[in-house]
Length: 437
Image (cartoon, rainbow, N blue to C red; front, side, top):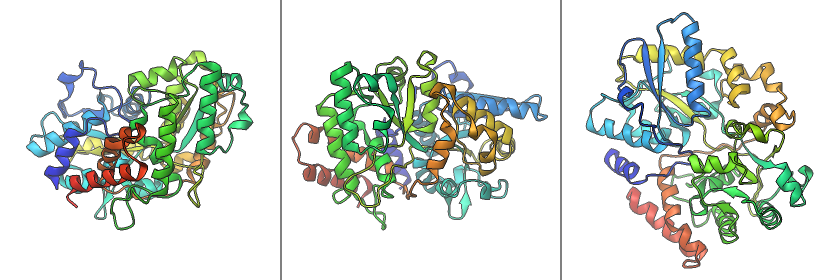
């Protein structure tokens, strides 16, 4: 199983929803973990969110009485992180691996099941009852807890009020949309403003499917862990939605979370973004657009009973490597700041839009903050309240394989080479071939 999973990770160069910019190169010489006993090397992605937050945590820890402490955060895409971790684990060579690594919640079970002995078990060090239970569940394996939960992925629809007004829509018109209404608005925006409606590659738009599935309490797998494509009502509805977006050229075809996708949003090329609360930091990085953005809940499915307007996208956790020469320091650092520092959480909430899942931090005044960028809307209060309505799902161990299977056939469906039924049948066959079922 370990070998098969490693091969899949090597071959799937862009499965993750949140893949960010690749390592900048200048940090290559600094990647070796444990370069001294007061420096921690951390692998993370997203220079607008995860990276500056980890650097801020390092400054807090230094002020907490650890004057010589340093945190060396290496910017590395999610995909590169996974591939380099698997390479190190399978080769048995720990040199060059980090002390702490950021792992997306969709990937945690695969890592901990296949490489359990490579991660430090933390239940004796961290009070996990103080974190949101759905996040703790994501990093629990065989009664052990192998990472510290970090951010919530509570999702919403961000939109440019000026572009929508030009297309004939008010903020009231954007409330409680269905997915088909969302597409129609996109058509009107493109026709009347000439702007792209969204920015992502439709045949790789499985993050839309995942938001929609979680909003209905469903996932790629059934209760027995078997692949659930052909009869999954969410996948069927969202495949049609994605095809409509592609056919009408509503999406600028760029990688959603790579530099070109972020640039399309921050340069003003697009009118809307379906993403999580953590994406607010990226939107706010375009200071010239302050006051032009608003948000609402995500669109709702029409064909699925009990569907909601609430979902999760992404979210991640911090894991410590068992073989790190600085394991004890890494655990103490994470415990002190990410599992105990309310002031730190209040600051990253306002500064970076980081809605943490550390429960004691959620009663602070920062959650009442009226953000001038969003015309004094209480964005953190709203997204936090939405998070309480998110249906829970079991991500299983093969989410990335399921993503790859669907992406392998979506374009043929868009091009009318396959019917919807044929497309989903082929996707199931691909998935079963990869996992050996």
